[in-house]
Image 1 (cartoon, rainbow, N blue to C red):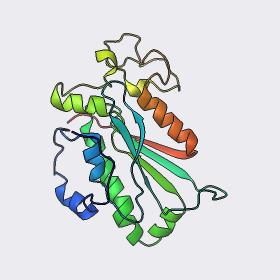
Image 2: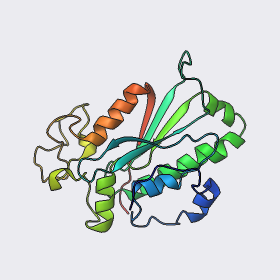
Image 3: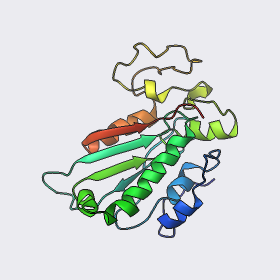
Image 4: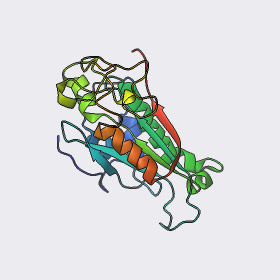
Length: 212
């Protein structure tokens, strides 16, 4: 499918809720289609492509939820980053993240103190951190875990610098837990790192799933 930025004609969040399946379907949608279903209102900013993937040149989208503020706000408000589906086969993580995005944009502002909470911090939501692997797991190999680097892939969750190369990872390219040539060798993890540095992220939440 084509890669388009989120537009003013994107469905409303109520339409998103109505369209959300009761069970997780195969990820036939590309990242741009998922982002186009995100709520568009005064709390959700336009989607930003934070990088392109290693193989398919697909965008990794982030959406910022919060009340718009002046760029020179001092001190800067706290920033939170939430992302999902580093592991391609964990489809439910994307659906959970999209439901969280809808809650933040639609439901939270209507609750006591919710609007003030969003005015005091921003939340970055990245529904699909691994779009190449995500689509591959839906179209070709349901149990594919990694990105698509050189066909063998890298386990993005083992590509971060914290304890890189330690127990629970592998130097074998064919392993499901292959850690990559070096920490942040992959554009997906490097982009998430750079976003965290740029926005001075204070809290980070990474959604995973287990089993079916």
